Image (cartoon, rainbow, N blue to C red; front, side, top):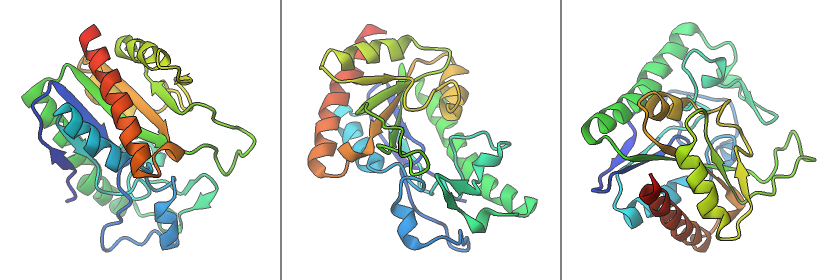
Length: 238
């Protein structure tokens, strides 16, 4: 069983990082070069460092995934075929092809279920006033190089957009070009927040940072400062 890492904190906030890790558990062979595990298809680049710094800055608890999304994508419904991806952004994942149902179920039971159980326990114990989901995105997809992504940050949401609207205003007031449900729509890819925030009627911010801004310690520090201020502003406005 592979449990997420849980950071303690006293603030009435909860940070969640679904795709912070690139690790592949022993016994699983994805059939890809090791170098691909540092690619954006395997991990949301920079989110581990950013989530940790932000948790310290806000004195907030955090739940951080410890397994690569190429093994199991915890931000997808376990019934979704994409929860164990056979390909991603033009890269084939041979170790996930024709995976026996029993092996797929074992991965879900060992990784997906404990991750979401940990989030549920934290919410039951804490009942946060605001949940913050941390992700990063690549400036452009290899399969769609013509589609530039000009936003340094985006805010994602599904039906419950109260916190998102406050966040969009707070970030735009800094002069940032903010993606409104960009580069992905929270109406399409929002499983963790749909399950733990929307279903429980807890306000949330789905944050996407363009990963070229998280490649250095200075970049992580800059976004920590921006997001700590944004989150505090949203929290006051709820």
